[in-house]
Length: 113
Image 1 (cartoon, rainbow, N blue to C red):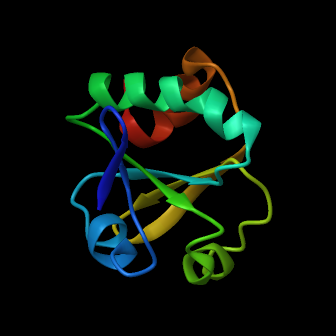
Image 2 (tube, one colour):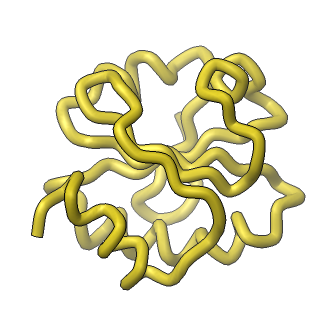
């Protein structure tokens, strides 16, 4: 596992089960790609959110081109796709970049206020 942006780790097909499905905290996964402009726009947003919400939410990213198994398993067709996992199950899916305030509003039911 490597650190992608400050506070955001990169996961792979090999460690997705351990790092995401086995996490005690809710995990926000960004399905991303190097060529994806909106994904790059989301980097600072996710980095800030990871630092501010570390006690309530873990944030990771997975490259769709290098990790096709996980991408196909969860039916990801567009990047960036943000998917929240709780207790090993996907509970929310969002597609596209958005500002931090809007993302926090959309995650409120998962991480609480």
